[in-house]
Length: 279
Image: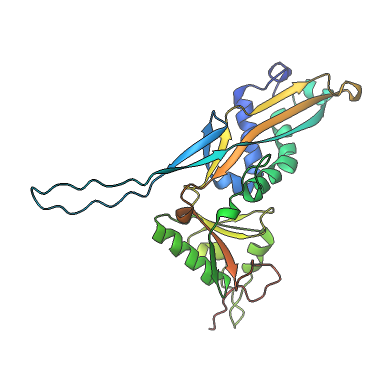
């Protein structure tokens, strides 16, 4: 549906803003797979507990009191913002879908930066990236390392759902072959382990994770505002896009593993990263 000038005078209507957020996340492959966690606050506290187990108790005996060993993971959101220019002709033309136009611009510029920030951000003014907290799983080849990571997440109480890596690396392993030249992973190496593959251009590591336990925090004051004065001389409208985001994995052992092969990050050039099998 086209956005008219009436809905675009100062701030887009909420449905349009929601559509733009979705377009932003569609262009951020890693962020788009995480469980979205809306908030009204600048910080979010995720309670973490490691309660003692209950005990089998004889009839009439005192029921034991267990300890919760509770704590909290405090995550602060960070602001991602930019100003883009749209010609006044496009703003006044109701046949132009401005929601899609703005969303496409976001996908080209803001979406990759959103992924980079939640993966590798180093703290204020960026988010704290999730990769730094990921425990490492190492093996002699990629397939074994992925298998170990799936098992480790499962043993900790999670369920691995996704395999993320650079698109070129995932594509390379679709061409892994056995000694007779037959493809080992026709539909991707992730599928062999029940994982959805996610190609993430900003990712220089390989991650196995449970997307239901990894949260993309989105503060609900996401704004798309317009000014006719900022770029008056260029006969353009300035559109300011501002959002606040963070990432959280409060139970990281159940959520995430960083894959290494022989102690190093898997790369496209590494020809020994995947196990070969004979006929």
